Amino acid sequence: MNPYYKLIKGEEVLVKIKTKSDIGFWQYQLFGLLSLFMERGNDYFLISDKRILVSIKDHIKTNRIYNDFSKITFDSKSDRLSFINENNDIETLSLSSFNLEYDDYQYLKQQLNQKQPI
Image (tube, rainbow, N blue to C red; front, side):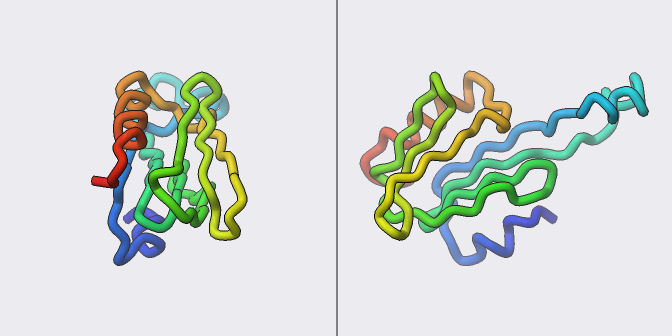
């Protein structure tokens, strides 16, 4: 069970991106070729109707509350997500540690460019 389920209980998930976790250098050295066949786990990027969550290797790295979904922007060149937090300050979040693929970028841009959340 993923650690973010308790945090988003009762919230509607608007954007969900799931990627495979990276294998670290030492993990690869210790397990060699077996690490290619081992279950690596998943990383998650979620935007619910109240918060933004980033879970990497089953650890919550980011749990930020935002005010307005329509004001969330994503710059794919710098992998930065900008949003207005609960104190009405603009906050940026780097997604560079989250390994997004081309399809993930397109999905994220499509979801954030809609005026109304799905």
